[in-house]
Every structure is written in structure tokens, then in C-alpha cells.
Image (cartoon, rainbow, N blue to C red; front, side, top):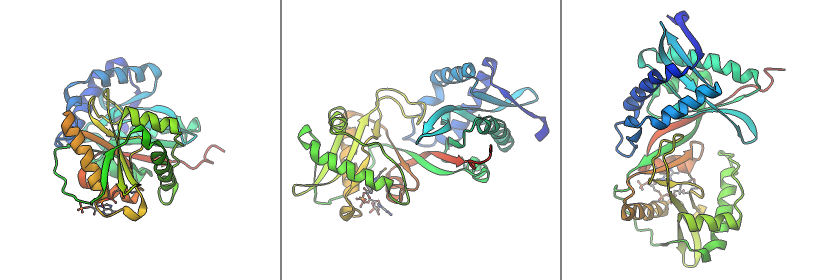
Length: 320
Ligand SMILES: CC(C)(COP(=O)(O)OP(=O)(O)OC[C@H]1O[C@@H](n2cnc3c(N)ncnc32)[C@H](O)[C@@H]1OP(=O)(O)O)[C@@H](O)C(=O)NCCC(=O)NCCS
């Protein structure tokens, strides 16, 4: 059967079959979760448009068996931390369950040759977190976990009484917020995360205060933690969140080391849930690095992991 699978560029005429396979995969791995937007199950307009653009750019391929599409993969090129990289979002791949292994391996073999021939050594891919079969296939190819996208409904109950004061940030909090954000940047660059985050200027932070909802925790007059929630204005085909959902993004959440593990994170999250409930927001999205030892434990208590970003780096001397 292996040698009967062919891979070739996706054509417009393959899109309908590809979308059908994607929807089946979405139904299988994502539909059981109440917090995960079911919008994508029946609204395929954006996905179709996305695949059409990939056909035009020649950045999509299909695997076929007896002329039927059994899998597809599309990708974006982007500079990740200054390195030429490819990125395959969750909307950009799927395979029929019966031939999953054969289809994905044929697709990756074919497309990774093109990438490496062009000196693109960093390969990133977002898959369904619950697709354990695909996780094993990719693990054996050398991919490892990088980022998790989690979703939750704000109506779950959180019991906490840390005793610290929490309030929404105003422009007068600019300076204290700036120093907390700068401290968090040091945290992300430390072991074992090693994530270089962009420097925020005071202007950037004042924009965040104005455009989203930053909650700050105080011990007396000392700011000791923050959480930031924005409200999305559109659907997002990269993390599959939908318009008018909550996004814990940009500044994220950060608590000073000596105040961690005392229920404050939970209490800041409760402020976010209360806000969402008061605004009729039904779903909240967060993403976090799996190498972030705090985040990887904390968010999983209240959010269901739905997407997993995996990454493979190829030996840089292969084309020497
Ligand atoms: C992640 C963070 C915001 C969590 O806040 P926190 O005040 O430490 O967490 P809490 O004390 O409120 O813990 C809430 C729950 O998560 C669990 N938890 C939190 N950190 C944990 C850890 N490192 N290991 C195991 N469980 C953990 C707690 O046991 C608690 O569970 P419970 O409700 O059953 O009691 C905080 O630790 C932090 O700022 N870490 C560094 C920055 C960071 O990683 N931010 C997130 C970026 S995405």
C-alpha cells in the first residue's frame, strides 16, 4: 500500500475532499469539549479561503491513494526568532484515520525535502492535543512539544481567598506595570524556558491598559502579580478561537516568585472569569510553553489543552 501513495501539489479540485477530511478530524478530536468553539465544524468558509490561497502560493500538498485524497498539508514561511522557519497551523493538515501514519509520513517526507533544500531547518506544526496517534508519529520523526493552546468556559467555579487586593489597571499604574512586565521578560528568558520576549515600552503598556483588561494584585501598595485578558474581535484560524472570546495574551499572567503557590494565580483568574461572565463571554483561550514549569501545571488545572505546537530542528550542516 505504501508504494501506492503519491504526493503532489494540491489543486483547487482537491479542496472539497481536503475540507471533508479536516472536518472529520476536528469532530473526532475536538468536539467533545464544551469550551472549544464548535464554530469550525459547520463554518468552513475561512478554511476554504485559506486552502485556496495555499493552492495559489503552491504551499499545499496532498497525499492520494487510488486518486482519492487521503491527507493534505499546507504551510506558511516565517522568521521564528530570526531563523527561517515553516509553520503548519491546525487548519493546514489532516489525514483519514485509516491511513493516518502512511499519509502523514508521505506528506512530511515530500515537503520536508523541499524545505531543507531551501535551508529551512526549523519545522513547526500545530496538531490536535488529543490526537495521540499523530503525536507518536511526529515524536518518532524528531518533533517535540513546544506550546499548548488551552480553552475553558468562565462559568467554572474557583474557590479562593488569598487576601490580596485585586483591581483593574488604570493609566496611573503604568510604571508599576512596566516593572512587573520587565521582570516577567527575565523570567521567560531563564532556564528551562529560554524564550526571548519582545521588550515592551511604556507606550506599548499604556496601549494594553487602554485596549484590554489588565488585573493587578497588590500586597499593600506593592504590585505583586498581573493577568491580562483581551477580547477577540475576529475568528482566528491559527488557534481556532472565535470572535468575542477571551484571550489571555500579550502580558499573560505573572506573579512575583515569593507570592507564587499561595492561591493568588487562582484569584487573578477568578477576576478574569468574573469579568467574562459579566460581559457574556463564553470561552477563554490561553497558550503557554510546555517548558514553562509553572504555566504547564497551573493552566491545565482550569483549561483543557486542545492544540499542541510541536517543533523539529534539523542539523544545520546538512547542506554543507
Ligand atoms: C503560573 C502562575 C501565574 C500561577 O500562579 P500561582 O499563584 O503560583 O498559582 P496558585 O497558587 O493560584 O495555584 C493554583 C493551582 O495550580 C496549582 N499549581 C500552580 N503552580 C503549580 C506548580 N508549579 N506545580 C504544581 N501545581 C501548581 C496549585 O497547586 C493550585 O492547585 P489547587 O487549586 O488544587 O490548589 C505563577 O506561578 C507565575 O507567575 N509563574 C511564573 C510566570 C508564569 O509562568 N506565568 C504564566 C505564563 S503563560
